[in-house]
Image 1 (spheres, one colour):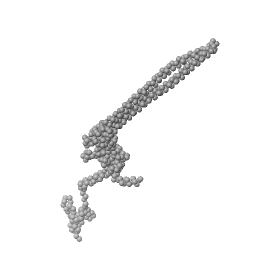
Image 2 (cartoon, rainbow, N blue to C red; image 1 turned 135 degrees about the horizontal axis):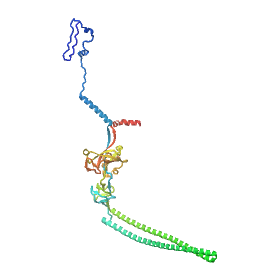
Image 3 (cartoon, helix red, strand yellow; image 1 turned 90 degrees about the horizontal axis):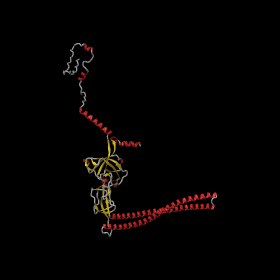
Image 4 (cartoon, helix red, strand yellow; image 1 turned 30 degrees about the vertical axis):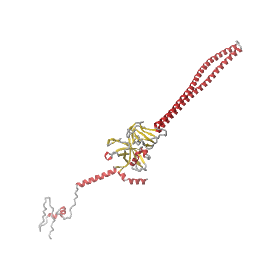
Length: 465
């Protein structure tokens, strides 16, 4: 039987094929083959010589894929960290304008009138008491000029004043005469009381002497040295002196009562004089008021109630003004500005004092000059009309439009304190009252995961409740 050919051997490390020595035919087997049952070739050699359809799979790592994997892991971690730690602040945009903290004053006419003189210009600084406008009303029939009518009124009131002055002089003279007479009576009574007092002193001395004399007569009568008639005569004299002393006392009391009555009359006369003088002074003051009222009805002078700067002048000479439309607006000097925003009810719920605000001034485009920071200091608890909230009726429609709501929608006033009184990006441009602003209210701040899970959290709270 022919011998099977052995599989080819693998190349050795030198690169040459391994040499296989086969035994010669008829040769006797060696002792090694008989003694060792192990295969002639290693299993690895046999496996390497075995025919295969596919080789071993080798996975090779590329550096680019490692970098991509690392970046993806970092991005995923950053996203998780952002969702867990990051937050978002809900904003609401409202509108308003700048107003002085001290407020502004709208100067209106006390009644319907015609502007005669305008003594102030737009933006002019004015002082307290300075004349701003001179107004006039219709002149009555029979008076050709306003000055002539005022002269007639002044003459009439001056004549009445002279009559009152004369009456006051006559009254004062009459009352002074009465007061003088009463004062003289009081002086006379005082002198008379002094005399009575001296008489009482003298009479007391006489009574004492009469008592001593009567006592001696009684002792002498008891000793039998004098008669009873002599002793009784001394007793009658003592009784007479005592009666005179009592009469002087009664006269002193009566004179004191009369003097008190006269002094009371004197006080009443003085009070009557003072009352009459005050009455005449009141009548004179009333005449002065009537004169001022008559002049005011014909000529109305509008003065500045405080220092400030005049703006929004409405009345020109010859125009008719009323008691509703303001003649001008007076802005205080060196005033501190604040922003008054108008927010609808759907926005004002989460606004609290201390809420941060970012303002955008329409006069300074935020794309170029940026924003201005502010802080909420007060929120109105009840919606009010724009005229009441702002104090500038001419700006109310603009403020309402900036608020983003319909005119019938209630608006709440939000007062914002400005971080600076000048625009940060343009220090040379001062902020002015009335500048309109748009504001972003930084209201509710939450984590991102809270915003994402808000429906679930709300549902969970509803289930618990």
